[in-house]
Image (cartoon, rainbow, N blue to C red):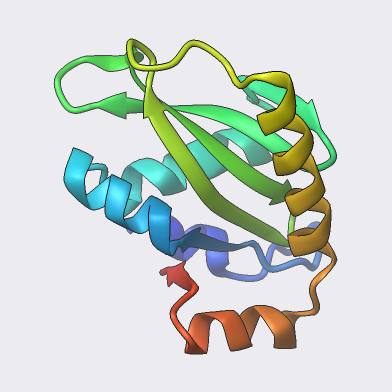
Length: 137
C-alpha cells in the first residue's frame, strides 16, 4: 500500500510522515469513493515538491483523481501540511462544484493550519483517540 512507504522513517530526513483525515473529510471521501491510496498519492506528490497550490501557512490545495476522470476532472483537497512530519486532509470539493476559496475561508483555514501543525504528536494522538482525526495507514 502506498501510505506504508510514507509512514515509514525516511532515511534522508529522519522524519516520519503521518497522514490523517478529519471526520468531515472522511465522510466526504467515503461518499465520493476516494480511497486512501489516492490520498497517499497526493501527499507523495507534495513530498516530491509537486504541489498544485501552496496557499500559505501550511495549507495546500492538491488535486485527487476522480475514478475514471483523472486529476483535472477530479477533486480539490485542502491539506494542512508540514513536509516530513504531518498531513491532515480537512476539506474537499469537486472542481465543478467550487472554483476557489473565498477570502474569509482562506483566512480561517490558514489559522487552523497553523494551530494543527503546532500540535504535539501527543495532542494529535488524543484527537485520533476521540475520532476527530483518523490516521491513514
